Length: 285
Image 1 (tube, rainbow, N blue to C red):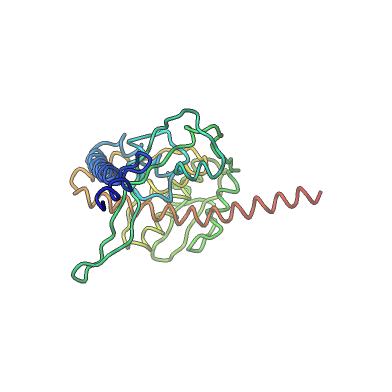
Image 2: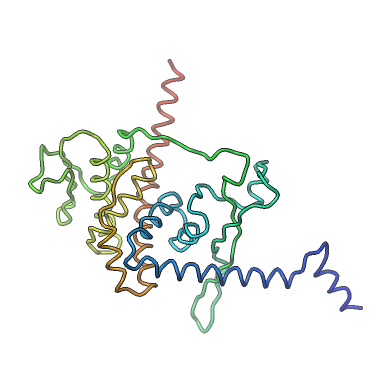
């Protein structure tokens, strides 16, 4: 009797708990394999590194491993939600079946022999392009993007006519001063400022002075706010990764992501405040 009850409970309405658990286990294993292969691909491959940076710039809240998963499954993704979240927003799907993008979500930590472990579970996500709604987009004025970068700059900012190095912007790590030259505000100028601020933030966070990583961070931050700029360190950084273990590459990507996320957080707040301020002024007219 009890065997029959349990069997019916496990297969109610066609839902098989054991089959579901097995599917999620296989899905997680596949996700780890995708990540492992993607990290290997970054070795000596500047094109692969560029693709990763583009995805991470759009999904700056996601871990590098999840950014790699998204890039390998759906490089055009811009906005991910679970099926439940889309439905709660009363947003329908274009087709009965949708492309599922797997990411890894941390579960509840546990301890074994005094050591803490965090398990990860496979999570199904769906991109906005599978729905009948338009992706959320915002455009940003270049001047305000630059203001946002400099507003909460963690070091003093000094304006100079020009720099001996010929650069548009340069930070002095020892004196903790960001020198910016008087120049037109264009994409090149904003990228230079973003890169130098990233260099200082990276140094503060990791105690490492890495121009190539700062260049990548500056690129991701600019990309997020619609600033077209080159990333000049792809060849050097991907060449460096050729001699690194995959777990060390992942750590490298994580340090860049954390600096970019911190910069975006501060900039985002400033830009939101500026947008509200301009809206209030417009309504007051």
